[in-house]
Length: 370
Image (tube, rainbow, N blue to C red):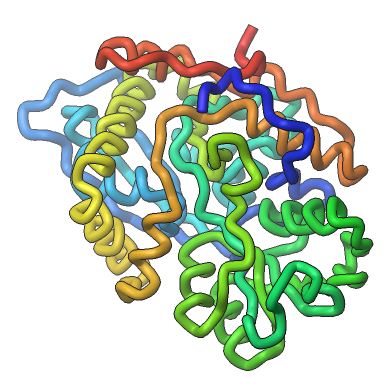
């Protein structure tokens, strides 16, 4: 979808800010704890060192961060960085990754829309820039088909979201409001009961019958389907061209200013990784699963991996118009004051890379640096 496309007013919001709820740490895909990984990629032999000895990148051990998983696993970032080494850290929550970026523990990160918006607005536009896109899609409403056969059957049911105030939680709240149902955002009580449940335990809660469904990202959605769940709604169907941002690439403004060559090299690695994923889908899927096993000690079974992988699209375009729509819809719902996102994007480095590779440039929907 062109970044300049106008997002329909009828779209359901899929993201908001975790600062809606004060100090609540909520914008990861389920867990509020972070996890570090000491993995270091060896610099390319005889590779030319760029302006920094190393670059520290962060991401989640999650399929919606497939570009980072595969790019690191296959050495595609290191290839572009030459003699500048890659150091990686993994996180289970957006706030932890933003804290690491602010502290200088990472320089560049793959992260969801809500924490990116939160980090930018909380710092009054001083901490980060979004420099590229990475993934779209991969969010579904999965239900117990014995209890929920249609949307109308959701009334009175217990439906899980990953965390109070996280991207999927607010998406579900706004979707319910659009249906005319009332739910108290803080308690989750109402016509439908929203139960905040860590994605790690959501499948067990679903199996035990303590929840009747969940609005969750992959691979949790496919895990629920493997336990007998049914997809009632794919969030992609709510968006024009079935695209909405689920993962961005961010950079600290300090690192971008001091090491633009390193940032360009990482973005070139990202673009080439996405191209490799598109042209080698089966190999890329296996590579992502191998990376997950390395990080978590356990790979995903085919019954979960295959459908989850199909529902996520890696891309370079940050789909800026959808980020603005997400924030606008959250504000319209009265969940936060409308944030000023002007300046959150700096797509010049990405567009330089795309132009050098003969690709069309992408737009920032009027939210770029002045």
